[in-house]
Image (cartoon, rainbow, N blue to C red; front, side, top):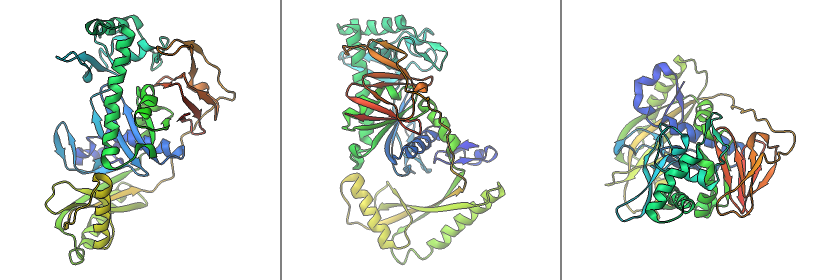
Length: 429
């Protein structure tokens, strides 16, 4: 099976027929994984934060994954239905540098995976976010990424020290500055998909994943006034988990531009049925026994170019009211203008038994593996192995929770509970 940009999978032999629907398949897997783990912990409303090496993807999940048909990739509009997310060029491998005015910047240039950050010991010599975390002690020196890549503290220190000399400050202060700039860039991305669309971040949990996500989660939540966060089990490979749990699904759409009115609704049922019959036939040919169908429409105010996707309602006045409410929620106002229908869309999803991810907990509460020094923290900080945590074990910050695919920095004033789903539930005291 191959992941598609709208959050469903398709048989590999058929994926090439509409290859455009694979453009955001990786990030879409992350959102499906985030939704799965959020629901496993009883948290349906969340802002997902996927921090990798080169970029960070953020999205809002309000019970359901939001879709859009107005996304852009590399500056080009892509008018197919895909997960609605916002991406910035800041990640663990993002390079810190000084602009012409001497201001510290982070990204969008990245060290990538090869040579990667200086601390990878592969010849990279430019300071990155990962190097800063290592110097500050939030990423312990004894950490081996993926269980096999030992970190080179001296190389990281040399890289950041060069930047510090240009700034006329200490190496640790420069490292802290790198994280502050990176965190603000990422916090601003989270504001784009929440505050700028009429949502209060404090009403959501911040679900942070990706290899670097756990290191930034507490400070990002604090910047947005959020007191609840989740670092999911297998967070460093959550996109892969999402692809495993994603349903087999297809989508079909038809453009039908017309003013929304009671008279114009008459022919839409036949259009929907044609789309549904086509999807049923295709999926049954692939062996699907039972298919669940979901209708939606893309609407806009007459004269506008952008649309909003809404669930299908049979009466024109109800659809009009729904558009007014969605526009009010996202943009702070509704318009007294005629509403225009643009696209009809049907999603077909194969009905299957829910996937259950087996979770193992230690029989007894874990003790720290070691302690380490963290810049800005007076006492030594305990380091725990996440695999050794028992069910419902509670940890108080400051603490570091290490695993093969990611590391979590539990900041002072925060606590974490290892819930029955294996997810770390973080709350600010």
